[in-house]
Image 1: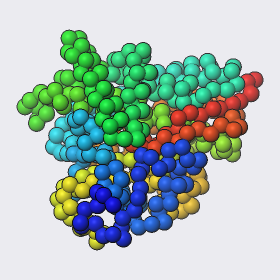
Image 2 (image 1 turned 60 degrees about the vertical axis):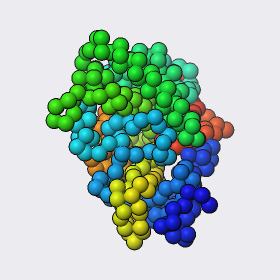
Image 3 (image 1 turned 180 degrees about the vertical axis):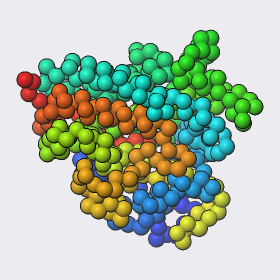
Image 4 (image 1 turned 180 degrees about the horizontal axis):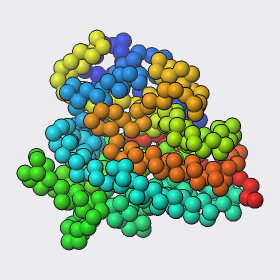
Length: 398
């Protein structure tokens, strides 16, 4: 087999392509969770060759251990992007400087000012689709409410959304490095044009903040590569992650009437329920690059080795959670890795939580009883994020 370094023990080698094998499967969470039946860490020759960590505790430890596991390459495979996307693919101290530029837009106070817009958008979208008695949730809601909020945050036109979603899909779910590279390169080209235009009319939006940003204790402005890397990752993150999570939430609630009723009868538990749903439906995968030769849990890892953290199965680890497949809104331990952990914990976590909460509140208020249209089998899209390509829902308008 190719892409197997000499320091990798043969007994730890497994074939596993996280971008291809599960796309289109009926229950990809169940299939992915089979990784828990094997070794805690194994090596796959697929996608350029890399280690795969299967357990929650190891994923959390590696997230926190920036000294041994660098974020300079945080996605697999290496070389599938024209440049690093920042601050995702950076280490301290530059990583800290990049986050400092973005942080004012994601504070609790800043997000609370956006919450009213989220409530208004969610209400408007639901009232628009309610009389139909059905919808394709991904396109009719999930790709509208959070993305409209994000496009306001970066001051980009809504008319650009379909084009950007096509590029984001190639980045997150492209089955080959060539597709991912081409989609990212085209996105960077779009970003470069928009940033040149924005230089002529700086405002108080997030992209303007990047253009005004500095690094190295304010001693220099960001260079062009840093500007493009930061703006690109902002747009990619704003277009996919919350939309994909919303769709998994909607699917679960559509299929579980007792859980819907629990939220309707006890709306004060929505925040707690949301954390449990996030535990059950992690959607991401990230990677780290080994900074120097180390031995981790008895396994020799060499400088430059890539390590995949398939967070999508972290919440299903029976060593971490009792009866992990059962969704229990009163579960005591709902600690999860949906937003990462450590220095790279998602800066937009509070905004994401707010948008998810608004969906649950407003949807159940207006459409308390709904279900998945019989016979509909949405396609699973695996890759950097774990998503459904569609979700057909139905209800009886009153």
